[in-house]
Image (cartoon, rainbow, N blue to C red):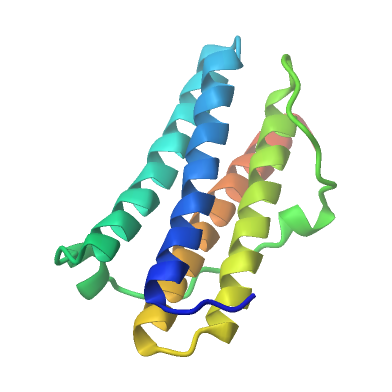
Length: 155
């Protein structure tokens, strides 16, 4: 996937983040269990932060989140590697919801890593590095929730 300029990269990334916001927000409205509803709402808020950051960059507004962003290594415990992709259906179990979400984050991370490899400017590389780290953090958080939940269930 090639982009003509940084604005095209930002437009693409904003579209992906908006899709994630809409997906998680929709699930939070459909889910009958309050804990799952709140978890999806939290995911939607996190993805909205990414969209807002990208929007600020695109508008030319100084974005402290980008200029002061601190990179750190996020471990990959690879739980999502062993999960098959699934579609949401009402009444999914908590573990299934976590698997669905961590698989989505895995795919987002893979996409941003691919785009990082293709980025030609330092500005584009920094944007994709930030997005990679943010998706990696979400993936790790979900995989940790999944591990904790499964341990409680005796698995």
